[in-house]
Length: 111
Image 1 (cartoon, rainbow, N blue to C red):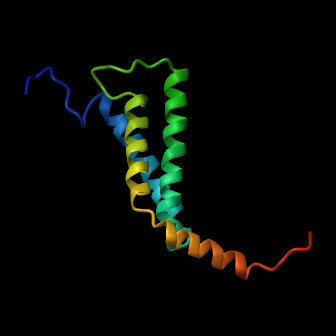
Image 2 (spheres, rainbow, N blue to C red; image 1 turned 180 degrees about the vertical axis):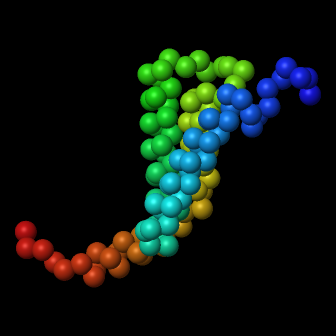
């Protein structure tokens, strides 16, 4: 590696990686507070929203898509990839069963 080639984990990339790690950790923490059947679906949704907000911030800041360091566009891509990965493991049958059980347990409201 050249002495002038930036490392992925140092310099301007460090902030982007720390932001992605922090956002992901917060999303995992919040998703762990919901019932187990909904955890992966919640994590997928939270990471998806985080990716949308990060992409919006990148658009507002007029960051370039291609750069020699990681940008908010890259952060949005990492978060979206995490969202898709979590969503791939969601069990729709378990989510539907949990929601049906929760709906049956809820008291009927007069409408």
